[in-house]
Length: 171
Image (cartoon, rainbow, N blue to C red; front, top):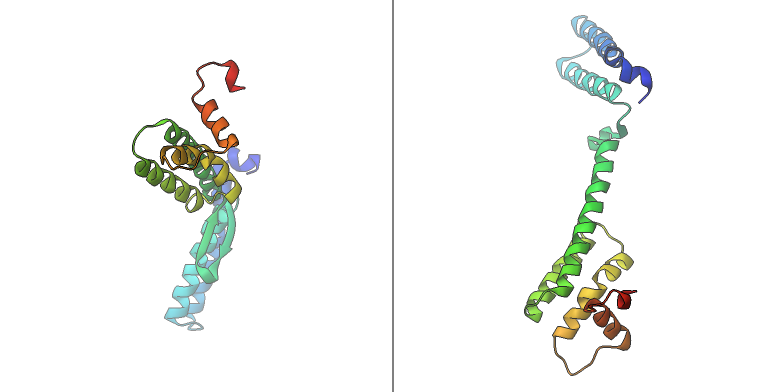
């Protein structure tokens, strides 16, 4: 937004009001002169109001698709990105917590499955990031299952680092 619009909000409002007023006057004149019908007049008034709204919010509008009746605000897209970022952070915290918690293997698997699904669907996280986030919780899930198969050397190192009690061993 340029400085004049921040400094003088009345100027920002004047132009759309002027445009809407002129269009309303023109369309009303066409209706009175019987050059348009009532339904066309209603449609023109609707378009006029949408145009006035779009002119007023021109700094924030990123897309207008009248065919789809869609108006996308840039701020809404930014907010969506921030929400996804916060959601991913929360999932990372819960995933790390999942690696430390005790409980049944089934409960841990259910929690990990729900975390993974949340990362994939509403948060639109890429597959590589999902795998990286869920790596430690899935290793702990495997360790808890108590199968005859053992953890790989890499997986065992992850478990050892996870439960390490000294600061020097965590590097």
